[in-house]
Length: 513
Image (cartoon, rainbow, N blue to C red; front, top):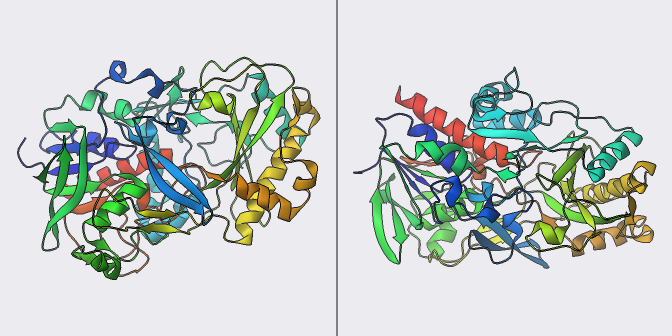
């Protein structure tokens, strides 16, 4: 391959999609660089990366995961895992594949333009999926690369969850990829028949054979090179050697941490801060890394009265979406069911009768914290601050999620199979201050980071790219991953990451015409 027309950095949830779609044009040379290994087929993927009953990203010491040092709160350090393998985090996540809500698209289209409206996004959402449950129709497709099936609710714990929600008078939500009233329902998943099919497999298994698409693993991109204000290539480290790879256009798909950090290292970001680090400033864009959006999470465990069989397919059971008090965002609280004990979920073992868990998340749109680059050396990690629990509204929503889950566990439907919640106890549940302290000591995150390179209009100090990912003030450089979403969606962003790859690829294809 000579100089590629497009160089894509990162083969994850958006990058694999973008490279596959662009390379469908045989006249366009595409180079895809991935920092981790690039298995070429299903058979080459390690089995633990395909097993839908575990979450590889939660496994300690996995060679396919990079851990980013971060702080959830000033006194709560954390290591945020991200996939470092073909398929990126879609290879190591939980297989949750739920679309954003119409409200999200309404909000994003204000910053990103009409391409981000729900009506414009829906054809792309249909085109990316093969819905094995519902087939083709006004809302769903049956010919896309991503196979979707909904979790089985026949497991006794899932049946009890459904019955408890009904006992509390909560609605059923049969299709969480529609836009119905939030409630209880199965989880749409890209795990089918017990296998988690990542975007590398879904999009690149066939596309990788195209002569105009080159996929290279083990390539860590250190920075973007410029001539004036035009991006001309990237500096790559491979097998301990550094080189510069030129390209006609560069698209960063390195994730909400990786893309923002790469922009900083390349001289794009808050100019004064970068200059202090000795990074030559190409474009002063203070929005890069200024804040982020994610979903704080806590885990509640309960004890089954009798040992339960392991699920045959996914670890996921049902999901319940509730609206917090005030009702500003419908369905902003998520109660996600695990049918596997936490110790088994992360790849270990669990004794018979071990507690099962609910993962509770506050998914209201919010921006806080941020990503600050601390050195011009790419090997020095950035400082990542989630800024969780800073407001009373943040704390209130998580209290409501915990209390709602405790209420479900107290229903007659659930007490038939459960001997109760492990913690917190009644005194803690009834005391706001005590419950806040309990939540703070057990706080985690849903791994849904967005918003570090937010889209918006040129000249807007809160924006860094336009609605098609083009970086403001420079030429030949785009960002296409969840970093461009100004706020995180009201649901986990895996499906939206794939949509971003589709949307930006569609824009690039149309621009050539």
